[in-house]
Length: 307
Ligand SMILES: NC(=O)c1ccc[n+]([C@@H]2O[C@H](COP(=O)([O-])OP(=O)(O)OC[C@H]3O[C@@H](n4cnc5c(N)ncnc54)[C@H](OP(=O)(O)O)[C@@H]3O)[C@@H](O)[C@H]2O)c1
Image (tube, rainbow, N blue to C red):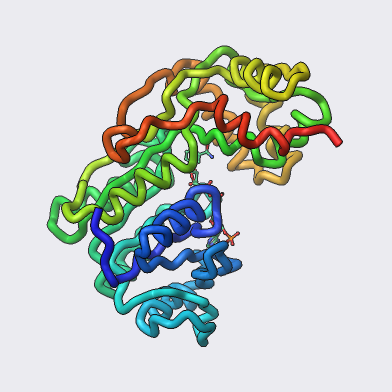
């Protein structure tokens, strides 16, 4: 790991993984800007950036150039220092994100950015839909010597159980819903994904590869329900839905229809065993063993407490 004066830009910097990357880089005294529509981060280093509004794309570069901790015309409270040396890319929550993301990669390259780290997903191969196309684009640019790159392909996040759709049904019904049957997942902590991201963003040598970022143990949703039952001291059960019913449940929490269809198909893939694997990527890259779901549940049990 090597921190420098030049800034690292984290898109989606207020989200589950991005906010943790911003915190971890800040703790290392690495200048960092977290970018999102709201433009406010916990660390006071936010900058307004909207994928759909190209007029905002220059904001992080202006913020890094002025290297100020005061608000400026770009809507930033940034701690940027000179140029931006690396960008962490998190897609907007739409299915057709690839075009706009590749356009931004080119925009950032023209501004002098050399390193790009993409957050994709374990279910999406290079060249696959959405982030898979961005993955293939970065690899191709890397082969041409145009960029340094890495793609993180995390599996399902432990922190998903902090999202309203799970919190509500755990608290109100004592139930967790999925369409995964007994399919197992190596649930990963967003803290570990962020720690891997920090390594690949700051390493002196580029990685120029992809990493499946997986947690330490394979657990089905029923195993998760059993762990939560033990931790919370009340019965939580897994309800196995059809893919169609799972899509409807996602939609009832405000998810667009096309996105919910994609989520339903991901549950089917889990059911068929697609996520049934572990590896040692987190430990190899960070030097620490990946966090266990039970520890996450113990640390966060207040979220699921009944009032
Ligand atoms: N959850 C999982 O289990 C899982 C597993 C594997 C891969 N993934 C992938 O991880 C990504 C999501 O990461 P995450 O969970 O860390 O993010 P997240 O918590 O959903 O946060 C999304 C971030 O993007 C920003 N954002 C949303 N729309 C935006 C827009 N139009 N323009 C600019 N910024 C925007 C949000 O901030 P504002 O609201 O302020 O804009 C926020 O900072 C997705 O690509 C997903 O496919 C998730």
